[in-house]
Image (cartoon, rainbow, N blue to C red):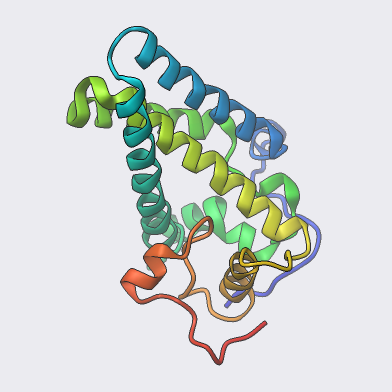
Length: 204
């Protein structure tokens, strides 16, 4: 485990890149919620999806996102850093967040990066799902916006006194006790399925 520090860190030597690497959480959440609404509305208005299919496709897309979230966090953000290039990439994308988990300006990927990645997913899903892509990607991007909100909340606010407290506990374990567990941020589903839920004796 890397040490956890308060404050922030400079990741890029270029002042411009350093500034672009930071974002207020409200910006990407707003962007992806609006795109999500726009896609499903466009698909419905132009007859690509019906109201009933839109609902089903939306939840399928959301479900797909939970899997992508888990896999990206486990195998990309926590990749095996066996080369200097991998170490540099991993640190810029995620390691700095583990070193400075309270840095609120780095709790989300910069919008210009996430919009590019979202566009790639759109074209991949278009090839797979055809005209149903508008419902699928709408749910997928809503899942991403929800992930951003949950991730910000677990770092910025005290845990609630209800069933959602599990999300706070799991993410705290991931940061402060065992970064090989609890990869799911917005949902513990895939941690349960793939055996990476924290063991009961790991408490915060």
